[in-house]
Image (cartoon, rainbow, N blue to C red; front, side, top):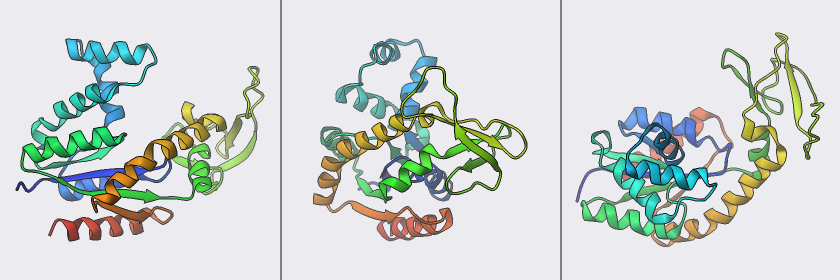
Length: 237
């Protein structure tokens, strides 16, 4: 069998997967592969494969399993992925999971672990809806890290969004920047609902195979990193 380290990260928005993926990538020398990033990268390409994916995305449709698998196959074939990868946002369906397992088995490799970041859903909502940043890139949260925040008020939105958005003013006088997909509470809740719906069958799939490892994500970055390193070192021994 091969010696690659193939990890899958699962977890609701706000669980800190992105931050922990950076730590794992640095510690173990394997790339963080996000399917969202892979799809966005297609807009910088003009080959036939990229054009096919762009037409799907531009039409507002979901990319089908076979095409998604092909995108992942292409990424896994690149030199920096020779020793493994951290997969984030993939697989999203049991069908994709089965394809991945078969693809790795054909190379003498296998999934080492599926790391499920467990987080209370209300905490997840507050982490996403509450996060803002200033022009220098410093981040704050109206619920958890409000030292630099002066006021939080309903945004006088002429479009009358519901639920209402909030306007955050920082102590330095700036109006805080919010990610567009975080600014609307309804959009945040929709993403959480989608995650629950999509994840349930995958959790069952990986539990059956004995690959699932649960991590308490409601802790400091350092505590979660230490837990992850212990798990990875144990399975990779």
